[in-house]
Structure formats: C-alpha cells, structure tokens
Length: 84
Image 1 (cartoon, rainbow, N blue to C red):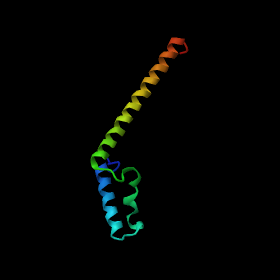
Image 2 (cartoon, rainbow, N blue to C red):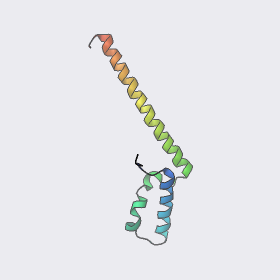
Image 3 (spheres, rainbow, N blue to C red):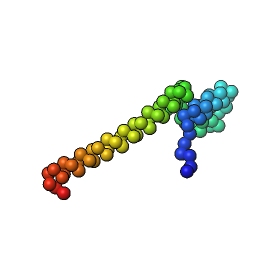
Image 4 (tube, rainbow, N blue to C red):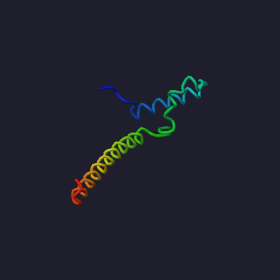
C-alpha cells in the first residue's frame, strides 16, 4: 500500500528546515513546498503533533459510530411505524 502523506514528525522537521533556509536568505519560491503546512503544524512540538494525529483518528472513529447508530435508529423507527 502506498504511503498517503507525511507523519507529524516529518512535517515539523521540514518546517524547521524551511525556517533555517529563510533565515539564510533563500527565496520563498525555493522553499514554498516546505512551508505549505505552516498553518496547521507551525510552532508545534512533535509530542503535540502526535497527540493531534491521534485525536483526529479517534474523532473519525467516533463519527463512524454515530453514523452507524443513527442509521440503526432510523431503521428501527421505520419498522416500528410499519413503513417497510
């Protein structure tokens, strides 16, 4: 299976590298790909990024559970009303 993206640790390391290049006088055009994640991960420590990733995963799992329960509830309502 192909890897879908970067880990939070890789992103933070790339941001640090981009900041160093900016301080050395590199142009934004040269390092723009490395800065594209700045809004989400800029200023984070690696532990914070790991926690964010795990919370996003848990949130996705919980959303699926809520969707399944809602579907089950709707099916039970229809059966109880006799509209099947």
